[in-house]
Image 1 (tube, helix red, strand yellow):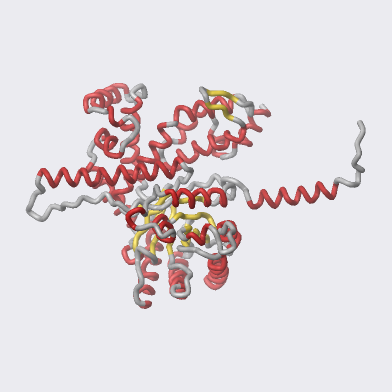
Image 2 (cartoon, helix red, strand yellow; image 1 turned 135 degrees about the vertical axis):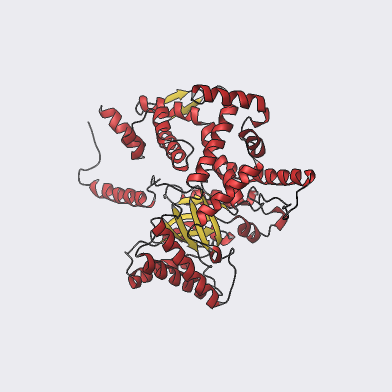
Length: 477
């Protein structure tokens, strides 16, 4: 076979290509497989206690019990798939069949879905009501005298240490400091120093998933400064190098496009020097920075979709978690019962309508986020916890059967393309299907045993988190 290239002319070219490929792989390692929290609940630092997560869970349960005491009412309130056709008679028949057989009946999908979601939401609120909590020294705290913020930084750190000892903290926790603007940078750094130093001194370690959130980022120098502070703080406090991790908040137009017309997010990420784990979108600050009036500042605004798309393009493949913003319409009843008094029928009905309307809005916002691959968002009130989990569980459970069949067929044919219904999968889709199951398990939508049964995977295959490894193993058998 004739060849024109000399034998010694290609190694240098191949070497350069190898280095470029390796550099690319370093920048874009893909999904880590680590659990990502489905939300971040935030509250003022002055209010935080070691048992805050449990107290929020109790308030969430009380709201669910008061405004949706059965699964049919809850399904209709939030707008679950098929909820409009539900009625008490069908629900009662379904429950009777479950009690007699001991198993869920899936022929009645709308009823099964409503009952399964309601049951799992209750279980989640009892077991782990909050996945991530951010102790806030910014918007949820405000500007206070230095002595007061110093005191709250120390007390909040001691409460985290107490929660760490009592095992009462949520799986993820952290603080949000003030932005690194000229006016607030020194106050922000002082709070960071007091909190982290006190927590490490009190507990002798930091929580496993502890993050510092930097808000209103505009320039890479702000992110680089936080990375430098982490270096100095770890060294002075005796914390292992690389322990401190950050999240950056994308909530200004300058976060998206810088003054040179460049995409700014990759530059922000580079300035973090490997310490950034997530990027959180700030809906209301961002829409305000676009000069959108308050009446139109909401999660579904097209300006928000643009910013989120920019975040996805800039951070796709990097392994950085994406988090959406918050719904600011609270599911809070307008009428409260005074001691020794009762609410009128009209007041009870208005309370129910108000809470259900806010629940449905929150549910719709979360579904929009999930559809656009933002699997985490912010919650502002304990009564939003039921709809957070309901929306996530509905997202996974409603398409569970189809996803199960696709993954099962795909794995069984070991890397050969397969056609299921009218959906054609290629090899690149395999990892996405596997990630679907991993996220569903992590958030509590399904159990690990259910995933194994539905997907035909083995436990080691599922826990490997790698579709490539699964296929290589199957092909070698």
